[in-house]
Length: 198
Image (cartoon, rainbow, N blue to C red; front, side):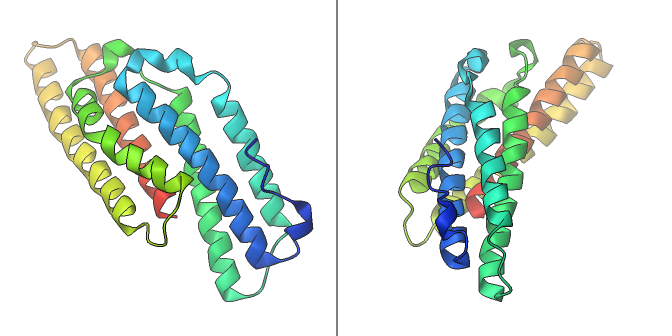
């Protein structure tokens, strides 16, 4: 139950409200990242999503409604509130990506390399989200580095695939499907980095 922390009686205390909303968002993030890591390891596992996207959507809606009743004019509280809303937005994008998992025949070299690069970083992100330490800096930096590495791999593969299609070494439709899959992967890891950051 992603809404279990959202006690309406604390919504009138902005500092506490922002913290319980943050806790709910961290639970949702940990569940989505765990599922993403599991599916990235074997892209045919998209059937393993079950009800998680719907549950995550419901939890994020509850967080948004809860925060709507916890507005404060205090600048520090507003910044915390803003950060939680940023995380909610990025999680909504991540839920969309999980629902749009690419077909196995569209997955190329970048996907395979990312499935080797990502697990350790994503496991650390999950661990931190479950048991946050005072300073998430290392985890945020590692998620950022992973996102950048995959973006660079995507750009390199894009050029290679387009050249192969132009030279007749690859079917043009297959090349475009692979490019879509690479953009999808790049975007997914970007949203994971931003969620952990916020």
